[in-house]
Image 1: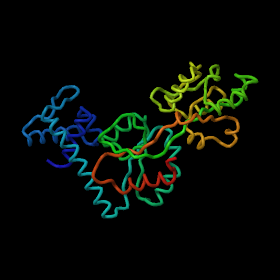
Image 2 (image 1 turned 90 degrees about the horizontal axis):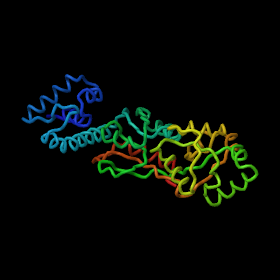
Image 3 (image 1 turned 45 degrees about the vertical axis):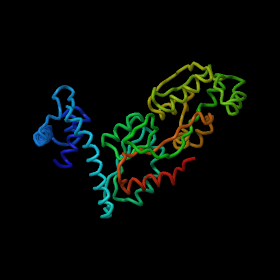
Image 4 (image 1 turned 90 degrees about the vertical axis):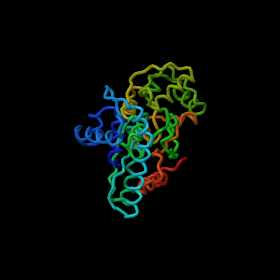
Length: 309
């Protein structure tokens, strides 16, 4: 039994399929099956019931309790000694939601690569709810996410508060609301009540998207059943529709600042909706005894460039 065998066992236990586990490990299925067979022979117990999907036996569940901790300790050991040797090369696998990379990373990566020119930052974008699972499966080293549930295997650290704006074209408001448009804009700025917009078309994100979920909650709170003109999982697509006067959309303040030109900002309004329309982005790493230096420094740099407030 060795560290490599433990990693192979964990991959099969997590994927519940030899083919997928072998693809994830970049080895052949035959090689993986041989390792698991040798491990079962060494322990004198079957670790998997060869059903579809695979199921852990009681012996397999027992080994699983130890395998995760053993693998984490090995990773910590290797990383710490890599830092002690002051290695100049490495890889940081960073997971975050779609479009957030464009918003957050250009300034951060520019500064990070001055400090770590030999570290490759591999950016893997996906849905927020999937990121913790990918971290636990060992596919990622660090995530930037909004945790929805407690994850005992993950250590969370605060990054910054993201504010959601209600974005819309001034021309659209004048067309739908007529002479009252200017007065309604003032009321929205003062009270945050969305009920005057009940006749306006809205652009909504997919269920599960934090911006869309907050927007829907605010509309319900104001008693508005939205007239939906378009839906998309991509907030940048919705923002482009917004600029074309197709509807109003709920958009992160940082994205609007990053992608809108000065001319476009003059053509649209962006209402701040108060503390109820913001969420805390956090860093997530696996709980382990040693945190690699390149991850520590990346987090510190993020906080320096994008403070918490």
